[in-house]
Image 1 (cartoon, rainbow, N blue to C red):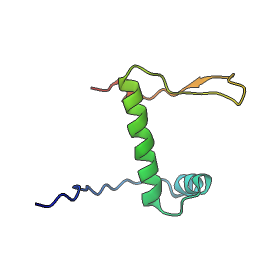
Image 2: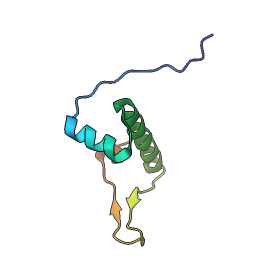
Image 3: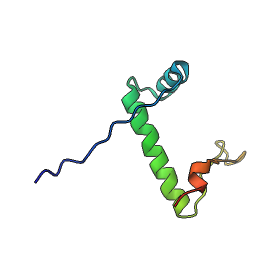
Length: 77
């Protein structure tokens, strides 16, 4: 029996400048690595949202709070 995880290839069209900016900011050189990181973050955020938690960011002093608002996170099943 083959226990290798089943994989699905996805293709998306993304603005090249936007992609390059993200790769540079995150220090990744392959679009595959960037997509993997993005999906990992979205997986975490959706799990947190499912538990009724908010996704927030603050400055270093814990002030100037911003909440991540994405329809995909609020329309979960």
